[in-house]
Image (cartoon, rainbow, N blue to C red):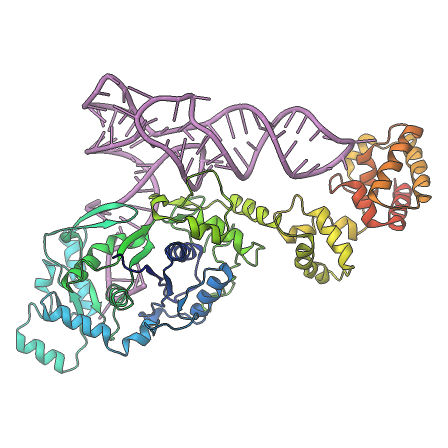
Amino acid sequence: MEKRVRVRFAPSPTGGLHMGGVRTALFNYLFAKRHNGDFILRIEDTDQTRFVEGAEEYIVNALKWCGIEPNEGVGFGDGEHKPYRQSERKTSGVYKKYADKLIDSGHAYYAFDTSEELDEMRKRLEAAKVVAPQYNAVTRQNMRNSLTLPEDEVTQLLDSGKPYVVRLKVPRNEEIRFQDIIRGWVVVNSSQVDDKVLLKSDGMPTYHLAHIVDDIEMKISHAVRGEEWLPSAPAHILIYRYLGLENEMPKLAHLPLILNPDGNGKISKRESRFPVFPLSWKDPRENAPFIGYREAGYYPEAFVNVLALLGWNPGNNEEVFSIEDLSKLFDFERVNKSGAKFDPEKAKWFNQQYLRKKTDKELAIAFNPFLIEKGIQVSPSFLEEYCRLVKEKAQFVHEFWQYGSFIFEEPTAYDDKVIQKKWNPDVKQLFIKLKNKLEILENWTSHELHELFASAQNELGKLDMQLLRVLITGVAGGPQLFDVMALLGKEKTIKRLNTAFDKL
RNA sequence: GGCCCGUUCGUCUAGGGGUUAGGACGCGUCCCUUUCACGGACGAAACACGGGUUCGAUUCCCGUACGGGCUACCA
């Protein structure tokens, strides 16, 4: 029988969760949903020196905003495998228990080397032209550990409370092969793997030990993580093997990385042209906060949609998917192997797709705060109509202002190009006559305005619509002109025309 | 440097031994439009290179180049 699907997203609270992490969470979530499994949020806070205030809360809030909700874990309700914070799990002694097990079976050992001694070792090896200095089957023979020291000295060292670490005893030359769901067989020789620290001198496990222990204890079925973990996967295989659990271990899936759009490398928060965090993130160690997608005006649906298509595709030409759609379609078989450069332009386009799905009322509610900030107050129906007119070109709600501000503010200048080209005293007389007709129009609607304009032309001759637009709004572009005039109202429209006639 | 992973338009990608190599973003042209926009049509644009295997390779294999990741008592 197939194991129940149980996956986890296991970030460390060392900073804001960026979009790469969100995508890893997303793929885990989608996979769990697809298979009616569990999605767990586990906090990997084994490095006390890197703990950042507020990071954990940020992770929880970011996942909530995205709609990527774990059904178990920190911030989302404890399940039977609590606690979900490794620092809390440590108190039960599980990690030590597993480490002892490895020591007892001869697959791990105590090491007493100080960091100075480790530095020395590396320098020595570099001087000897060793390209990749590491603590391994060869070099450990010259170090101070329970493999080289006499037994009584080891016991004495341990008893005296001297700091020590527990290291994995990696064999000197052994082929380690494992199957990755996304990449297929991966083969590495153990000579490339160092004797990883399992238990640190402060008693905390390292990631390598902790995540394995927790995955075992939490009955995780699939370990889905970024490609940056691929090089250490062989060490993890060894740990499972030495624990006698290689056959039951979670299946591995290493996701391709999200890369910077220009230049190269993993996406990083230093890239300033676009947000990398879902929500604004204020790092206590930094002065300026990093803006988030939410604050930049993105819808979570759009953000999630963009992320889903970075490394995964449905196999057809469809691109716009809700998270519900995705959770019915997602499959690791359609996840790419190669890294994907993030395209900020396409992200905007996705946002536009979702913006267009909103009703005018929803848009009005979203845009209202921008007006209030400018001290502008209008009726709900006016605002709704405004949004209807202005939304066509917009990719973000905050752009609604720039596409129609002339409705709220009288023009102070008139588009130079249009005036230069089309404006002259004769034309002015024609437009004055048009204005006179407008003044007596009773039913001031877009439709009536259109009719009046047409009949006026029959009588007066050709009237340039763009010119009329410029007289009223000052600018050469914008929403449907008769709609704009209707929204503006008779009084303001006439007034603006008079002002234009005065100035031009 | 070493090890690992990868490589189809600028970007995200589909495809896969014989295709006019498909779509999307972006870009350009045109149409619609008495304004504006949406929309529509069209276009430019890719199989990194070299060897094999094969009747045939963009597709399979091997190299090379390039890119990325890792190389901590960090995750």
